[in-house]
Length: 222
Image (cartoon, rainbow, N blue to C red; front, side):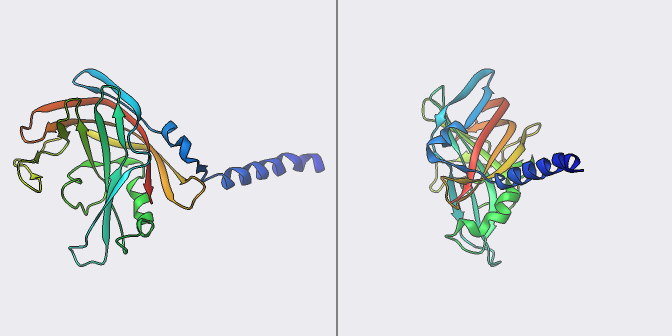
């Protein structure tokens, strides 16, 4: 009888151990090991040299709809091996306090959940819809490209007309895991995904094609 119980006890102990490590802490000096991105840019392979931003740049939006919520968007930037820079921004999480990202954590986790995201503007317009994504690429010459068509000849920049077309493009999150950063209570998730899209050069709207994109990054509410 005692021998028969042993496998069950071991199974319960293993289950408890897995549950305990469900939200592991990541030391700051290991952040860079998590970031990776790879894609084809007009049929040329591009990859990540290192993360240009240890975690991400989160921007907050003011409440202009009178619904008591403040909206947040952001994501990691990757320094690329062709000397370019790629930033992935997700939007929007929302919470009741403009300066406390953790007030938006529940919707933030939902925003990063596996599934398809819609290409839309985030960087220059306060996006209030969930499940949006925008990619910004700085090429080696310093010129900016985006999945959104941007007119930067005016200040502040505005959306160009007609808007960007992303027919046949996709951005899909395939994995999400909650973690804490550097043994703190900061809320973060590691996410992985795939993407392909059309990039439009600021002002002139020349196009580049991204295909076979994959990424891993830390998205954090800090």
